[in-house]
Amino acid sequence: MSAKTKTSPSFGARIKESFRKFLVGLKRNPQNIPLLMMLLSFLVYSLNLTDMSDTTAKIQGTGMGLSQFCIMLFSLLTLVCMMNAFPRRKKANIPMVVLMFIMFAIILFCDNHYMNAIYAALTRAESPIVLNDTTIYIANAYNMLNTHIVMMVITAILVVLLPVYSKLLKKINTSITVEDNGSMGQIEIEE
Image: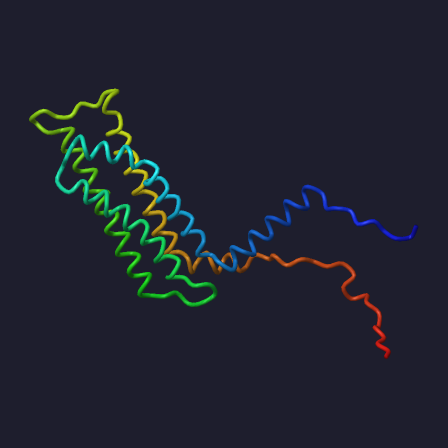
């Protein structure tokens, strides 16, 4: 019984290998970092659409529905622009990057307009809207818009800093050391 049985790697070794593979994937596609942040900001907004719609119906401010529609539309389009702006292992597509930043500006403008409409409805002189248990969705929408603005700014910063941290990621050593690589004998090939 000289044949060695192949043992499976330990749990720690499997975790280490999974982390190494994750880093290799990140080194090849560093644009996935801002893409993930953009996706998270889209999910934060889209999962709170009920509060946004209820707030629009309650306040009925000028351009609130249009702002809500534009935020949703341009959030989806920025995801598409992001995927087209940084193709795999190629140079950045500058027109797409510019278009993406224009969409970021539109989203931030619409978020700000919507928040101003909420603030105006809460502080107006004639019959201001009172926040209580039945109108708590207005406060939720306002807080969510603050969160969305912060996440969009972080996404824009991540896109701008993409060349910097992609170079830093490439400096990380993810190679595998193979034991006894140089001890192979001569291979004889005979007919």
